[in-house]
Amino acid sequence: MRELWEFTKLIRSKNAGPFELTFDIMFKDADSFHQVMKSGALTPELIAHLYKTQRERTRFFVIERLLTVKISIPRAIFSGDVMDTDVYGGQFHGPLVRLPIDLG
Image: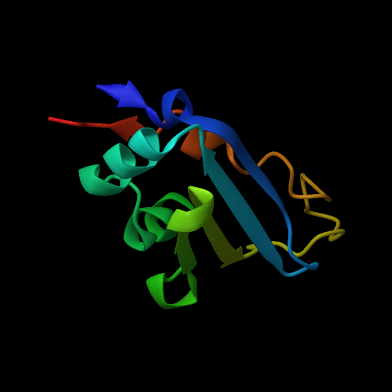
């Protein structure tokens, strides 16, 4: 069992406006990209579950040509709200870094 970070050169999150977060997962090579996508470990359903949002509100883009997956979800608390813990959205990618990838 490996973790997602082992297949990537970049995993990041950031604001996509004050009400949305976007995640970029950029793979280090085509083999890594295809292994993860074939494993079925990285899906819109998983993202919705991890970030406690509705599947219908999870936008999931697989960009094979760029060896990238881009995901957008609504923010539970909008950027700048008094309850916001990350104004720029740069720390929300944590759960994805250690995501188990079973190549079994």
